[in-house]
Amino acid sequence: MSTPSTSNRLFEPEFLAKLDRLALIARRAVAGELQGERRSPRRGASVEFADFKPYVAGDDFRQIDWNLYARLERFFLKLFVAEEELTIHLLVDTSRSMDYGEPNKLWYAKRAAGALGYIALANLDRVTLAAFGQERELKLPPQRSRRGVWPLFAFLSDLQPGAATHFAAFCQRYAQTARQAGPLLLCSDLLDEQWQDGLRALLSRRFEITLLHILAPQELDPQIEGDVRLIDAEGGPPVDLTADLDLLQRYRRNLEAWRDEIAAYCATRDIGYVPIATTDALEELLFDLLRRRGLLR
Image (cartoon, rainbow, N blue to C red; front, side):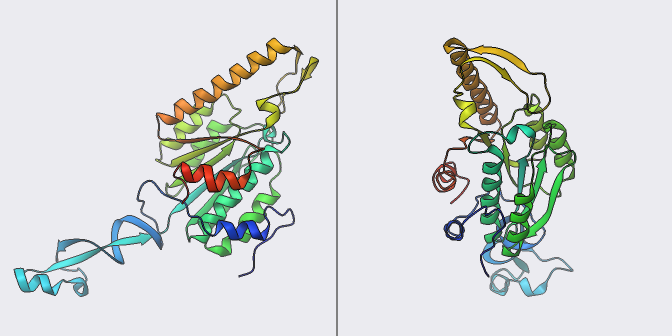
């Protein structure tokens, strides 16, 4: 199969070739709908033995263990671990606040989601992708196998900045409508006062959540001074202030406290929290940080 590409060139072919060496790790066994390459809590037809069960009328007699029958004179079936596909959920924040920074936060989120989606599809997992922060939610139909790479990259490339986040409402709807749980990768700056309510809604469906908390260097260490007017990208009133050393120091302390609050919230709820600056190389995120966090191998 030829290497997929898009008009916006999310990735170079050489980078995608490196991604073929990676795979996503699920912390819990899940029951999928189609046979794939993941261990499932169900019993099925694979080469890995799981257990025996007594034969009852209607069972597949071809699974009878005749050696065991010769010893016990009772019929038992051999059960094997079912290998079923895993659904990977990708959620991308496209609210207006994400269209900020150099490098741009939304562009970074698109590439992070695209790379993780590519890894999942290359390993025959099912991938769903939803973008929130638009007037209406945008969803990519579920994709499976490398044939889904083209639609995934095209969908991401076409995403444009939206308006306000409405994060909690989106997460509640997503948790209610998702067909099955599984690893969920959320790419967002989390600039929404209801971020806890949103994460709580996703936890209600037992998603294995990893939060990629994306901020721009201009947010982490703003280089401003004097009288400035701050404009809320999502429609709030402007704020006039005088940026001096004391103000900037208080801003950095508050930012650090906010990130610590998010990290503590996630740690007590088994959510993977990964703070990211858009200056962090995507290759470093995937091949170093997420591997050390146990999300990739």
